Length: 94
Image (tube, rainbow, N blue to C red; front, side):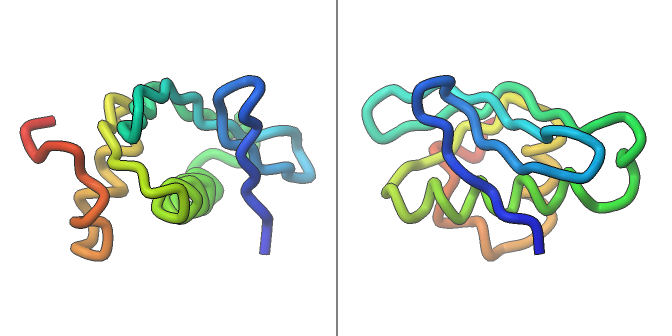
């Protein structure tokens, strides 16, 4: 399984893949994290790597005690796909 890490200095979650780095950029304000962009290498799109990245990012955010504002459409879709992320929403109006 590919590991997701929090690159605090660059305010992004990262996942190294064989085709390059997958990232999810965020802004942190107190305990609220806005994830505003996610991207996987072009050759891996549509193969589940984006979901793995977001699942890992959400797990790390939960461990930090953060609530999530998913301003990235893909992150929002992943969060809406399962009630296991209900505790992470900063607001359901996103």
